[in-house]
Length: 491
Image 1 (tube, helix red, strand yellow):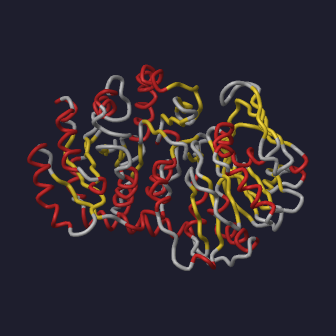
Image 2 (cartoon, one colour; image 1 turned 90 degrees about the vertical axis):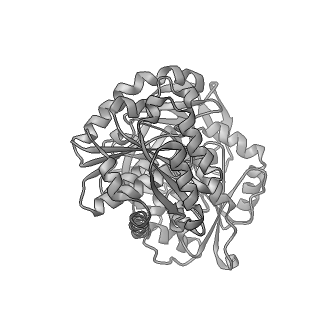
Image 3 (cartoon, helix red, strand yellow; image 1 turned 135 degrees about the vertical axis):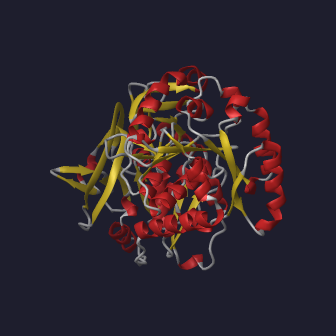
């Protein structure tokens, strides 16, 4: 049976996902079999698993760090925000319903058996299972029926390491405050703490580490300096886009291929764009609400968990006007999944999948119509782009069926007579349900050449592996790994 250890945070976005991925790679490099686990995740950035379901993208990255294929049991409960106050509920990879925020608080305890079942399955196949909590350990107002943090730790008897983020400020108060508000039984599960994202002279916070240990009684297990290359790894959710949005444009941007992406409220699977952003010859601008879309060579409409609502938001920002002007100037537009649906003439929702039954006009840049249906397509796919025969591997994750005259010019050939996507008559507006096109090195290079830019020869997969290895070495230098191993409990 595996040894287990859980990593909870003083808040959201303190680096739990990345730390777990890095520690997974540390243990793998030491010769252990490791699997990641997150009882409950909330994210619209999801991945298709080898067993035909979906999990949070962060757990897919952690699986990669472990050198294994992702499984639905690594993230048995996935909440995908949909609308202003609710989420689609995915249990062990399959959609089981929708709940408002208040309703979910009363229902979540019913999901603990599925969570523990998945956890038991993973423990049978690993030396270590590293568990990631969700949000903040100090959300004692949500402690009843909790399955994500201390509720799970207590039910599964898994010791906890608490993570604080010094970059946010107030990390001493965050860690000591968590100790203060936790019930004694929950606080007793915590075996130590790690302070993450230290910038500058680490010696300046040595006294801070002693103060935290003195007030909490928890040992300090590491002060982790900021790791710049982590920005090359996929972001977990839309909250993580804030940092990317705030980055200044690089010098010499004038000679780069300009890719512009409007950031919509329910943006999903936005890691489709990471390989483009990593290209040295590409300037990728994620445009936040309140700003006009700047001049571009390519505008990408990414995936969406709420296509109709996001289309309304896009038009409300005036971005539809910007896109139409870009199109008149001869600019290219690519729609991925929900973005593909927006490019059509109509989106029909007769069953009320996304809200009240009805339909709305799309942007009209492709002669297609989408009908939203209740069946969700989750499938790994491979094929070739029709225009150039370039191979790719990717996945589909969508609800809806899209048909129309422009589908006679499909974007991709999936083999066995299956095609997908649509291309306008002049070839400048394209849409597809396939995610992951740009992750393939050859496919990405072909897109860049089509748009008049030269490919750099970047091997995106090799880059991700190098970052994971580099981060593992970083953690070995700044975290007491041997003590973490000793604290992990045999279960």
